[in-house]
Amino acid sequence: MMRARVAYGGAIHEATPGPRAAELRLADGRLVPEDAVVWLPPVEAGTIVALGLNYADHAKELAFSAQEEPLVFLKGPGTLIGHRGMTRRPTGVKFMHYECELTVIIGRPARNVPRADAMAHVAGYCIANDYAIRDYLENWYRPNLRVKNRDGGTVLGPWIVDAADVPDPSKLGLRTFVNGQLTQQGNTRDLVFDIPYLIEYLSSFMTLSPGDLILTGTPEGVVNVLPGDEVVCEIDGLGRLVNTIVADDIFGR
Amino acid sequence: MAAGCAAIALEFEPFALSGNVYGALLNHRSALALLGAAVDAPPYKAAPRAPVLYIKPRNTLARSGDAVQIPPGVDELEVGPSLGVIIGRTACRVPAAQALDHVAGYLIVDDVSIPHDVFYRPSIRLKARDGFCPLGSAVARSAVANPDRLTLRTTIDGAVVQVSDTADLVRSVAQLIADVTEFMTLAPGDVLAVGVARPPPRVRAGQCVDISIEGFATLTNRFVAESR
Image (cartoon, rainbow over the protein chains, first blue to last red):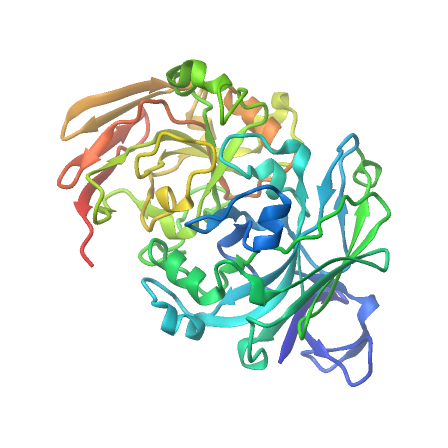
């Protein structure tokens, strides 16, 4: 099952795909065009854990050597926006890039969970586009929140897809298109640390709770994006996550 | 909220913490002074320009009186006493001159860490373990004349181990709020820990840490060996 959270007609609704393409069915029975709603992040996120350099090719692209321990950072909920939202690129920045990532949504509390049991703690999956502005990457507590926790800098959605409907999350193709042109391509089979390992690792020191998210990292192929660009992240079976880059003026800056 | 940590209520607006706790590192002059010339050497190569922020996730949140568990294989933990600002009104691009208007109150935060002395890309497992962020009782903004003139006194088993002052922050409370909200909005109930003095006191299993600020209830936590 695929579930979205959308705003429509003055309220927030759960929505599922409608009978026709580009149509949504709200929980109250209304059928609405998918571009008539405001798409929200599909989950009210708890702790947001994100992985850096978790695809061997991307690590190479950024000139990092292989790691012994997952490179993990945290985000706050204020950075999340939904499908079809706008993300601001500050004036004067030289390198802002998208990152298409498979996102795991935790469904059951997890503490000291061995890898063999880890997948039972997963509720479902969605796509994240985890923007970064490399200009702001300083050498203290990398990657700092100014790079990775900006308002509107983490696009999430469009749907939560139930774990039962994703039979093998370790074989999903990821693709990013900028203005229709394929710029990033990878497959979750190339994750350095796979999902069961990440749940085992994280739960060895922190309790994961329902609604917590794990953004599993991005493959190679990140390129600079500019105001006006439409960035679409796709993952097999999870849909297409659309975002538009805008300039400061939209935000009154 | 995480295991053992119910939603934390406030007696004033916004009436509850959001559970999002952010903190600023290297925002106390003593922390930069301790690094000395290392600030300009690899891997850092320069003093920080923007605020160096981190997140204490919801599993870390604890209250006064809760025991903090020291994991197996670790002899001591670092205590991180800080003033925490409780946001009262949505703060986005707030100028320093108006920053305190967005503050609902204050509390004592103990940013507990497994000791580490490299700050390039430390693992979150050093700071994000369950129970590693005890929070004290909240005090309304009106009860604090000047958040940049508060003295934090930390004792371990009654002996004073650190006295620090918010007058020694690199960025004042208002300036920090201004610089943080330039790129990330702080929401009502969010907490921003404004900075920890270094070197940090260290605590062993069996010891009790008290952190106090005049006019605030003391934050008291016993540290115990983790039992699996």
